[in-house]
Structures are given as structure tokens and as C-alpha cells.
Image (tube, helix red, strand yellow):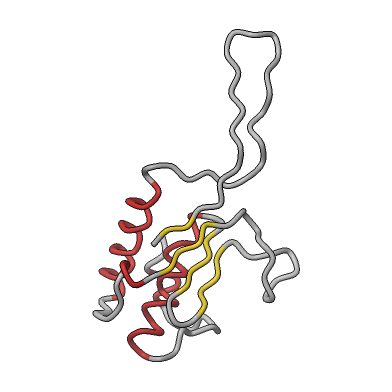
Length: 122
């Protein structure tokens, strides 16, 4: 399941006043496919068999959202057993690896010792 936090989009046409889009999170029809593809790529790379994209709860967050780990905020966060907060899509596969490790080993590797975090994220 994908949950998005949508902002307001202001568009202007041929007028004299232009407004920038309001700050926020934008999710469009391509987002679920992007997330599923990233999940599949991470799962294939790690060769871990347990875990399913359809079992995840994915919450799309603003970039650098508040979290307990970094004073400047997080751009992704995995919470056991199946919740991923993602603020930057570049962090998606990293958080999927935490999930896959948890499902397959019982340890999400919060210390990032697994080589998967370097070999399966880009």
C-alpha cells in the first residue's frame, strides 16, 4: 500500500502572475510502479527470498523528515515489521534492504554491516 502526503500545485498559464508550486510531496501515477520496480531490483540483487512488496506499508514523506536518528532528519526509515517511510526516492532500495534482511534473518541490520547496502542500492 502506498500512502502519499500531497501538497497543493499552483499552475499559471498566459497571465502576468506566476506562482511556484507549493512546497510538499508529490505523488503521481508512476510512483507505485517505481517503488515496486525498486523493490524487485533490491530483492533480486540480495537473492533473499522472503518478503513481499504487497506486504509493505509505504508512507511517502517530505524530504528530510524528522526522525530520532539524525538531527537534520531522515530521507528514509524502516520500522519493523513492514513500514517504510520514504522522503527521497533515492533511499527507497536502502530501506527495502532493511525490510528484506528483517524478514529473512530477523535482523534489519541497523548498523549497516551488510554488503547489500553498497552493492544493491544504486
